[in-house]
Image 1 (cartoon, rainbow, N blue to C red):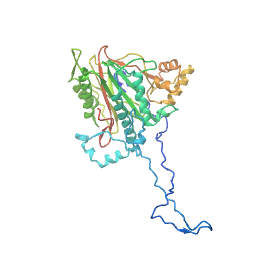
Image 2: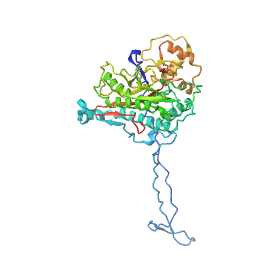
Image 3: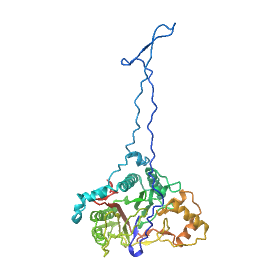
Image 4: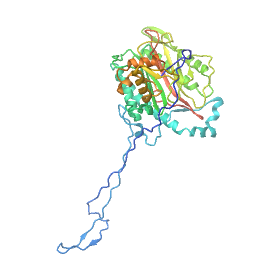
Length: 446
C-alpha cells in the first residue's frame, strides 16, 4: 500500500497490538483405530492348545490377535487452485521458505560472519516465522492470480478471489470479532487501472471490468500477528506497455539492491530515479519518457501499521534519514507516462483509524457503533467498505463519513496521474536483519 510523500504528511498508524496473538493453527489427530485380524493361517503364530469341552471333538487352537500398524495421515505437499490449503498444513513444522537473502556490503560486510549479529538474528524466531508465513501466503496467492486474471473479469471478482484465498491460507476468515486482527489482509487489495496509481479497491456495486488495453497494478498486503508483507506487481496484456513495466521493475530492483543498514533515504531515491528515467515507452505511436511518480513513496512498516515514520522517495532528495538494523521497508516505485505526480481523486475505498485522533464527543449513534466495530475487527489495519459489508454492517456510510470528518478515521482516496496516462508499480518488502538483508517477498515471478 503506497504512502504519499512527506510534503503531504505521512499518515502514521498506531503500533499498539490490539489483541493477543493467536497461532491460527488447527491440530489434527492421527489415532486410527486398531484393526484385528481373523486370519488363522499364519505359520509363525504361537497357538497354545486348549482342551475342548466334551462332545466337540477335539482341541481348538486359541488365536492371538495381531494389530495392524497405525496409518499416519500425510500432510499435503501441493497447493490447490485456487489456493485453499492452509500453510499450517503445508508446513506443519512452521519451516516456511526464506526470502532472498543478500549479504551486506562495504562497511556492513562484517555482519555476515559476526557471531554477535548471528546471535541477535536467532532471537527473532517468532518474528521471522510470522513474516515468512505471510510472505509465502503472498507468493502462492499472487502467482495463482497472475495465471488466472484475464480481461473480462470484474474488479470485484478479482479482489474477492485474492482476499478469500489469503484468508483460507492463513486460516482466519475474518468473520468473527477480532479474527482479522490475528491474521489475514494487511490492507485492502489495490486494483488500480491505467492513470490510477494507488489506493483503489472496488466498493459494493462496482461494475468495472478489466479490459485488454488496461494496465493494472495489483497491490496485496498479508499480515500474521501484525507483521505485514506489502508487495505489488503490474499486469498488462498488450506488449506495447512492456517497457513501462520493465522500467518500474528495474527501478524497484535497484532500490532493493542499494537498500541496507546506514543507507540514506535521499540517496537511495537518487539510484531509483536514475534507473527509472533511463527508459522510454512507445504507446500508440507516441514515445513517452518514463517518469518516477514523485509524491508516492515507499515506507517502513511497523507492527499493525503499514505506513511507518520513514519514507523511501523515488527521486533524489536531501533526506539524510538512515535505514537501521531491524527496520522493515516496503520498497515500491511507480513509473508514469504522465506528469509523474498524482492527485487524490475519485470514490474512496480505503480507510484506517487515525494515529493521532482527537478526543471527540460523537453525537451520532451510528458513528459510535461503527467506531467500536472498526476497533474490534481491524484495529489500526486499513480496511475498505467491502470488509464492513462482509461482517454484516449496513447503512454505515453516514457514520463512516462522520468519523472521517471528526478526524478519528483517515480516508485514502485514489491517487491519479494525468488523464490518459499509464502508470505501473512493483514492490517488495525487505527485512534489515542484523546479519543479512532478506527480500522477504521475493519469488520466481518478480
